[in-house]
Each structure stands twice: as structure tokens, then as C-alpha cells.
Image 1: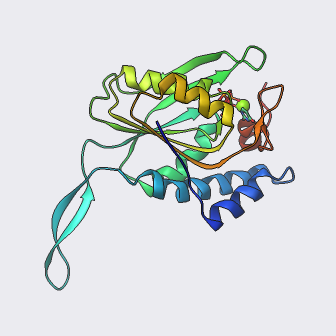
Image 2 (image 1 turned 90 degrees about the horizontal axis):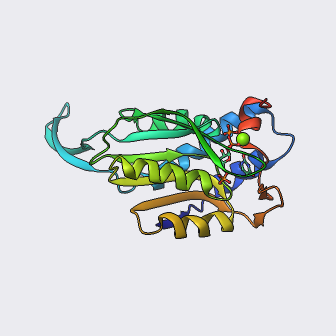
Length: 211
Ligand SMILES: O=P(O)(O)OC[C@H]1O[C@H](OP(=O)(O)OP(=O)(O)O)[C@H](O)[C@@H]1O
Ligand SMILES: O=c1cc[nH]c(=O)[nH]1
Ligand SMILES: [Mg+2]
């Protein structure tokens, strides 16, 4: 697994706004979208392309287009849904599959409560979206799920990670072909497995309180 923190003044600025406790849900959604658009530029670095001949108003020329098979974008519900719009605006031809996962806040076990993905992902480049990588349990489960369906390349885009979660992912799926792109690695997890300093519960901040 390769881990890359994308360092850019706009990412640092927007992430700081995102963290602020007074940021409204509406602003949080907008900032999340913008951050994903910036991160996706780096995260799509290895996306497959092919040459294409086109005609400009002046002449014929060689250009570049995204090659098949179509990339698949997979937001992990609920919070990952907040990143979908930014990603599909950058890669409009991508298909979208869904994984619904939630961690039990007491046991930290992961339940997969929804899945809508192609049965066979052979040869597909899959982009997984989830803003928070805390213990790493959710992302490890998602990566294993996609690899069982033969996904070729898995690129994860997260906003924040805890060092503990990255370490766990390296142990659990480090041998698989996975790239992880992040806006920042924070200090630690607290006693409730929340990222510190973090931004709180991303799902709640995007969509309001669960229950
Ligand atoms: O690394 P982990 O310890 O597994 O925690 C990270 C997960 O927790 C959050 O989802 P949550 O379970 O709160 O679901 P939600 O998106 O519906 O709020 C977050 O969006 C990740 O999916
Ligand atoms: O800090 C955290 C940890 C898990 N999930 C979140 O949304 N935030
Ligand atoms: Mg949540």
C-alpha cells in the first residue's frame, strides 16, 4: 500500500475551515466537495488513458482520452456520499457503486448494511471515498470486499487519517495493490476512536445527527 499526503495551500486552507466546530453543514458539504476535487487530481495520476485522433477547427491532431474499462467510484455510506459529487465532476464518465458500512461505536466492529456493486470487477480501477480513516476497520473491510471481486487497482481518497489506522491498514491489506491519498494525517485516536484533532463525526456534520 502506498500512502500519499497531498500538500497544497488550498487543501490546507479548506481542511482548516472544515475542522472548525462552527462550520455549518452546508459549508461542510461545499468544502468536502472542493477538497475531493483537489485530491482527485493527484489520486487519478495512474488512471489509464489511450491516444485518440481528433479534429480541431484547424487540423487533425493526437489527443488523450480515458481508456476502458470505466473507472468505478465507490463512496462508503454515509459520510463518503459527501465526496461523490466532487469526484464525479472530475471524472464524469465514472460508474458509481455503493457500499454501506457503519462501525459500532462501542465495539468498533464494522457492519456492511448495503452493497450495490458489479459482481465482477476484473480489470477495474476502483476509487473508494471515505472522509475518515480512524481505526482503519472500515477501509480494510471495503478493500478486502473489492479485492474479493477482483478489482485490479484500488485507490482510496480520505480527508483525514489517524496514524493507528494507517498502521492497521498496512498490516491488513499492505500486500495488496492499494493507493491511499489523504489531505492530512492527524495526531492520534482518542479513547472513543475519534481522530484528534479531527473534525468530529463526518457523517453527522454532513447530514445532521444520526439515530
Ligand atoms: O476507521 P474506522 O474506525 O472504521 O472509522 C471510520 C469510519 O467511521 C465513519 O463512518 P460511520 O461508521 O460513523 O458511519 P456514517 O458514515 O454513517 O456516519 C467514517 O465515515 C468511516 O467510514
Ligand atoms: O473521528 C472520526 C472517527 C470515525 N468517524 C468519524 O466520522 N470521525
Ligand atoms: Mg458516522
